[in-house]
Length: 335
Image (cartoon, rainbow, N blue to C red; front, top):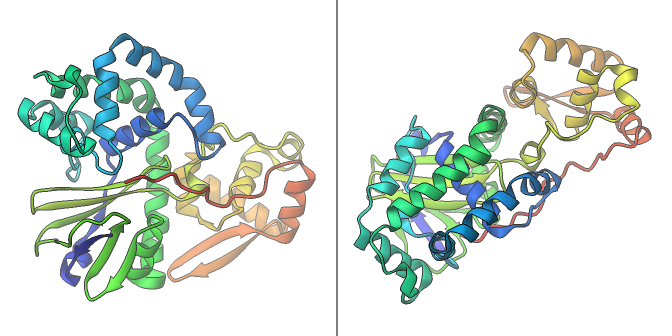
């Protein structure tokens, strides 16, 4: 298993970061897999997979490149640099473009665990990788980035609350299926047999949520390390496309029905604001109506107040024909 040695000071200084590049790379991985983990991903794939496949069909070198770069257990380093704090997509992808041709080929041999196909023995691989990543960003991520950003911000709120409730060990145990805090400053980051890597004192340790079911770890030299993880299942689905039950909207109002649909899993007002895009005052007023009607209840978790459907709320949702199982889908994580 892959282990990182992390001292407590580095862990205490770690932070959550929203990365447009990480979201784009996660979307590329989902397009490459071609199968979604939940209805939201399947809807997204139906919209974008035909265009992506058409692009690769028109550029067989790019098709071979992405296949090689994603590999079987290791992503080619040049293809997926670690984002910096506050860095936009264009700034991160510029580092893909700046990679040397020899470096790119060497990275691909590592991810393939063997020689390159003859078609990839060329010098323009960084430019082709940049073009493909830019296509995924411009066509599939950027038009919806503001909504995705709200979902990612909501996940950060939930994870931060988890640290307050159970400490860093509880958070690290839940980020991905194979992450575990093992004690004695040891953090298991994946299930692969890589040697222990010591995170240098003073290095940046970044946690980056993405909205698809993908995840990976990366680092830049000794100064920056990142754990990219899938955000909570209840947040990762495409709520803009989750329909409000037809009979429920006219009964209690579409905005309140939308909130009730989200509250199969406890969420704070901050999370609800982030996911729905409604203003705080509006969310608060709708929650008060739902509370007074006995459809939701409040629970305190550390410093946070969370809202969740009551038994009466569940009955109302089921009677309206809505799906009430909001459990997190099983992830399809390979790295």
